[in-house]
Every structure is written in structure tokens, then in C-alpha cells.
Amino acid sequence: MQNQYISYGIRGIYRVADYALRWDMTNEAAMYRHKILCFWDDHGLSATLDAFAVSRSTLYNWERSFKASGITGLTPRSTAPGHKRQRIWPKELINEIRRWREDHPNLGKEKLKPFINLFCQKHDYPIPSISTIGRLIADAPDKMRTSPLKLSPKGRVKTYRRRTVTRKPKGFKAQTPGECIAMDTIERRLGSLKRYLITLTDPCSHYAFAAAVPRPTSLWAKRVFESAQRTYPFPFRNALTDNGSEFKSHFDKMLKDLQIPHWHTYPKTPKMNAHCERFNRTIQEDFVDYHEDLLFTDLPAFNEKLADWLVWYNYQRPHHSLNQTPPVTMLIKHQPKCNMWWTHTYPRHYAIIQ
Image (cartoon, rainbow, N blue to C red; front, side, top):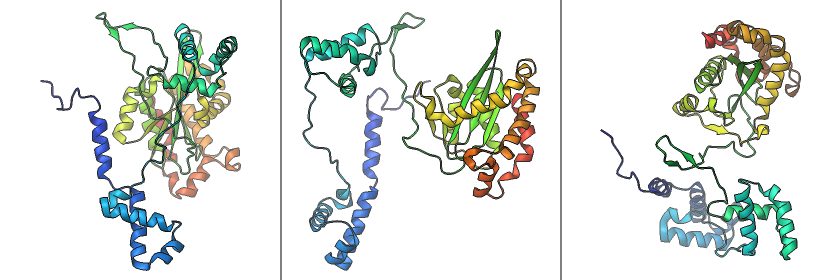
């Protein structure tokens, strides 16, 4: 028997429910404004104006809103203008952008710019900037984007739906160990053979972890993540990965069960995961290149040697970004007893491939 919620099939019902939940919550800014009004009532107008950076008219407006709607009336409203300027461009220009996007699917705004310049010069139209071309594309309901038709095994057309994922917050920088854990995958080839290394780094402490695996699957990524957490003295609070398939399915489900936010980088943007990319270079130049034959012939033995190298990397190797000290120094500053697991790094790492 199949059970369905009564809201099944009603488009937008969960968004409305989310709005209702937010309306029921008291805004922090409204609480702060109510605090100012209470201070005004207790200490008078002059003291309030000196203590808080608000004007006399603002206080009276807040008081009027509070009397009319209670504390919810103090919630800040949108400051966007009621009437916004509309982009007014020739319809022929917009059709020309669409034509190029249809003839050459997903052509970006930078690559469209030279063709649009020629078109505008020919027809004596104002030339739009690259940003304006991008906005004209974004204004279209379909984003002027086309995708090839794909058929299901039953011959039905599959609808293309881009999956929305959580991106790394703009300007984020890890301040404490474990606040953000970055992961990536390295592929090595020898003839027709392939081997993979799943790497993990902490951008704050530069602690690193890695394991060689036979296949880049989500189950292997999950096991590497769990092994790294057992050897790390701090809990992982955020995980940053690219959009590879090894970080889907089992791996993504594990993060949801642990209530760890999963951040994704933008496609073809490795600089969003720069710390892990730099460690990938280090581990390949300092270790993998010298043990590549073992990687393709004896994977357990390779991981044994890799575990020893990781202990040296985290415990003894100087790091230029840490003032020529190893990552353990950074961890000890945050937790003096953080070295409790390092004597067990070797067997726990080796347990990944058993």
C-alpha cells in the first residue's frame, strides 16, 4: 500500500508552509527594536537618543507600528523600491541572443558578446555589456537554455530538471578545526588500469587524510570520511566537495543522517576547493609518484605506507602557512588533548581496505 500526504500534487504547498513557519517566528531585529522601545519607556527620549543610533521620528514610527500589530509590526520590511526600472532593449536584439543560444546551446554571455556587437553595429542598436547580456538571458522564463531530448526505456521523453545543491557560502573562511572539511578524488592510470585516491583536508589546521580505493564510488567515499572522523579529535561540521558521483548517494545520505551540511563547488571551479587541490599535488609529488607500482599491484600494502606518510605529514612535516610547524601544533592550540588518536592512525586507516 502506498501512503501519500494530503498535500501531494499541490505545487508550492511546502513553500507556503515554510513561509507560515517563518511568520510564526519573532525576528531578531524586531526583538532589538522592542528592546529600544522599552528603554525609551524607562529612561526617556534623551537617554534613548544618546544610547542608540536612531532618530526621534524613527522611535515614534516604531511605537505606532507596535501599538497596531504588536511585536511582529517591528519586523523590518523590504527597502526595495516599489517601481523598479525595466530593461528596455529592442526585441530584435533579444531574439538574436535567443537564436545564438538555440543554434549553439548554452553559449555563455562572454562568448556571445562579439556576435552581439556585430549585430548591433549592423542595425545601429546600442551595444549591451556582458553583464547586460547575462541579465537578458536570465530574464527569459526558460533562460534561453535548450537541452537534448532523452527517452526512457518506455519511449517517454524525460524532462530535464537541474538539481539544486547548496554551494559554499561566499567569503567563507574556516576559523576553527573541523569547521569545514574539503574532499576530492585523484585518478591515476597505468595502461588500462585505474586507481583512485580519496583525499580529505581541513583548511584551518591543514590536517590531511587519504586512502587509495579501487573504484570512485559513494560507498568508498563514505568509508574514507568515517575513518577520517575517527582519527580527528574534532567533529566535522561542514563538508565541501565537487559534484562528482562519488559524493552522492551513500555519502550524501550519511551527511544527512549526521546533520552535516554538504557544500558543493561550482562546476569547473577548482579554486573553490583550493586547499584540497594543493594537497593533491603534494601527496602525488611526495608519495604517490614514488610508490605508483605498489598502487597498481598491492593496494593494501600501498595504504599501509600511505598511513605512515600521513602520520609524518600531520605530526612532523613543517607547513609554510603554519609558520613552519606541523598541523598538530594548530590542533593543540585549540585542544591540548587532541593527540589521543594519533597512535591509532595506522590501524584505523588500514581498516578501510579490509
